[in-house]
Image 1 (spheres, one colour):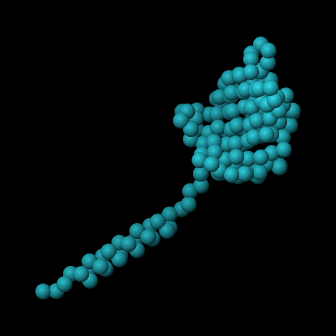
Image 2 (spheres, rainbow, N blue to C red; image 1 turned 30 degrees about the horizontal axis):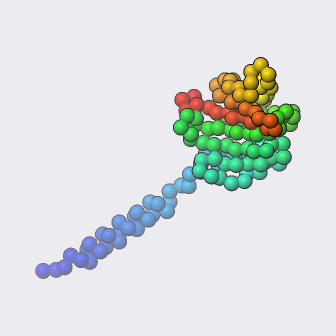
Image 3 (spheres, rainbow, N blue to C red; image 1 turned 120 degrees about the horizontal axis):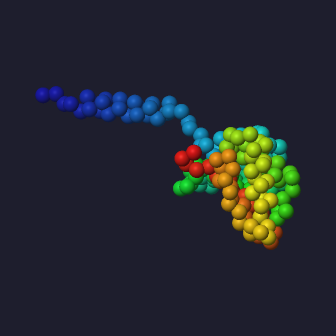
Length: 158
């Protein structure tokens, strides 16, 4: 009788090589948040990508105190968050509009109009928290004594 060990060893070796080749040649897939952040950094001057934590990419810009792009939440597909002074300057509106236009693929004028409406509606009559919908985007603006911030999201089903 002959031993079957060399035959089994060669099958195992061939299977291991095939498995390694399958994983070695698979294309690398970039995260949508990373792609959005890199695209924003290329489009907007002085915007820098800081770091990524979980599904959120944090960025910096001289006109904003905080900036981030988040992906795959439980209620949204993608979110843009920006924080600035209590009384935002036109440069902040332009920054948020340009970022929203790039992230959500809408015209820059529409993005600037929606974000400025949301941030300007906060006040004595409507309070310090405003929620509105503009061009299939959900916008939530809030403020406290020193800062104002806006979160722009698009739902998963849109």
